[in-house]
Length: 109
Image (cartoon, rainbow, N blue to C red):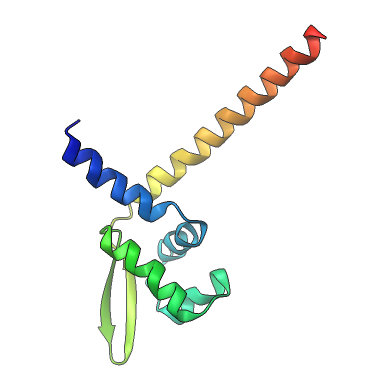
């Protein structure tokens, strides 16, 4: 992998490296939303949601369009959900490994 590709990928992963942003991506996978619709996810000020959305937009994950006075946000690259699904596999594999390691440690004592 070229360094520039690694930097671009890291930018995307950094944009996802926040629980609120992950929940926003999940919510946007269900359909387009405005800031008010996303606010319930983290129960924070709309300006905080807007900053999170800006990071997702900067990474190319989310786009926006105007509908009158409202700004509607759209999950531009739904394929990112495949990467998020992969994290579940990693968590499950790690849990099995940790359980197996604990079982071995218990049998050694």
